[in-house]
Image (tube, rainbow, N blue to C red; front, side, top):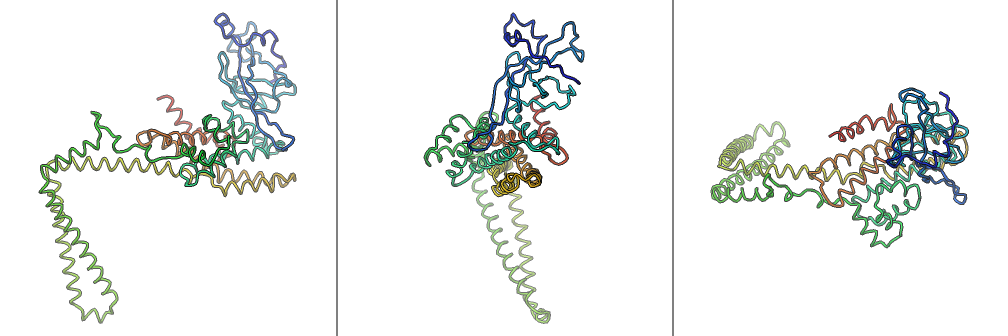
Length: 488
């Protein structure tokens, strides 16, 4: 399909998108978009690229041709935006704006760019327009590393994108480390050093509040770091306590349990004490018999066959102890059956079991929340990948760069991406248990980890993950869950 090199008329640009009521008649005949770009910018002094944001750009995508039917294939004339007016080597994403559609594709030509709102336009060389900075940065990474064209040479800023990979993974590692580390100050200092890099800071805007970011960048004292670290922890007190559980009348379940038990004891206290004492004595007797039987069995095992023939007394004692154990066990079970038969005991025991089961359930969610760091990418893995970049990709030798990129990609797919997906799954499990984690800084901590994991999945969306890309694997699993949740 050939594209027309038609630039937007100056008059249309001056008008802008149809925002007022008097301009609503233009809306069916015009398509507008509001876009931002992420652009690689090199620092001459450092010799390193940063990936900075540009825009927003409010652009007319196209207009309806005169006398054309809206459903026709060529009904719309899409504009070329001159290359000298927009960032050339950029990845794009949509910025929500009034009277602006979301662009879906961008086509790069020798003289300019075309933006389309159609996914199935079948345009050769078209690239996706993302929906966020993080996904657009992933698009830039895909192009720079030639993920769609294995024979293409990496872009000049490919090395810096790989270093950005590792910085972002380090960001996730440090945030999960802060969940339960006993020495948070050093981790907070490492986090502050990461945020000094503009690309990392922009990536983290969605997971750090403005106050947290300002404190980290202000190089505060160790005391301030220690105070701020409390906002990154998971505290057991933020999880649901037994006293938080209410019945249908709004009363505490624990209070109901205590009231029921107090009434039960008032009616059957003496008999309960007698039965409890009998059961305890039977258990103690069974324990003593068990120890004596084991002692006799060990002694018999150490004797020869001839010695056993002349030691019938030990065998008889062993049999007597076993018989006594059987009688004691039957007596214990009879006392327990009598205990169970007491009026009201089934109610008290049921309440107790439910409270214990609930405590166990909440404890399991708490353990999952405090185990994020154990399942996350490790410092050793990131160090090994940095070493690959330093020794292979920074050498300038083409063969070494190719081998280094292959090794780096293999480690990323085998060691790192499964852990990022695990972070998303674990944090999703905790967040989907509001009966367990319901308040406080711990809730925000888990949401922070969940959000950052999702952003990293968007960023690495085009990396191979098994037989699919990471984005396809996510869409076929958690993506379907998210779509269902939107409909509920």
